[in-house]
Image (tube, rainbow, N blue to C red; front, side, top):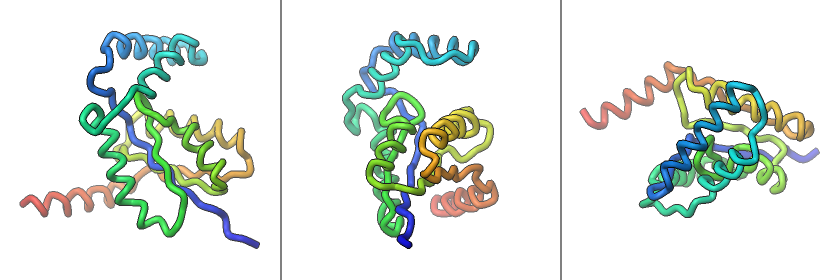
Length: 169
C-alpha cells in the first residue's frame, strides 16, 4: 500500500493592499458584520467585494504582509520532506482556505495539515472561522484527512519568543 500524499497549508491573516479604496473595505466589513449577526450566507454584493479585494494586484511594496507570509513559506518548504505546500489567507488576500485546500487535493493531497500563523488563543479566525471552514471541507471531501494544528502550546510559543528576544538583548 502506498503512503498518503501529505500537504501543509499555512494560513495567514491577510492584509489590505496599499491603494485599495477604503470605502470598499468599509462596505465589505459592514456586510460581513450583518451576515455574521444574522447567520445568513454571503450575499452576492459581499462576495463581489470580497473577491475584488482578494484579487487586487499586489507587489511586495503594496502588500508587505503577503510578501512576508510568502517568505515564511519559502523558509518552511525545504523542511517539509517532500510534502505539498500552499498558502491561504483568512481575509483580504487570496487564495482562501477552501481554494487552497481544493488546489492541494487536485495535486493529489490525501492528508492536509492546516497551520495558522496566529499563535494566541481568542482570535475569531483561528478559533472559529478556520474550524468552521474545515468542517465544511471535510463534508465535501470525506476521503481526505484535514488536520488543524491548533491550538499552539503556549509554553513552546513562549520559549520561541524568549529565544528570539535573547538575540536582541
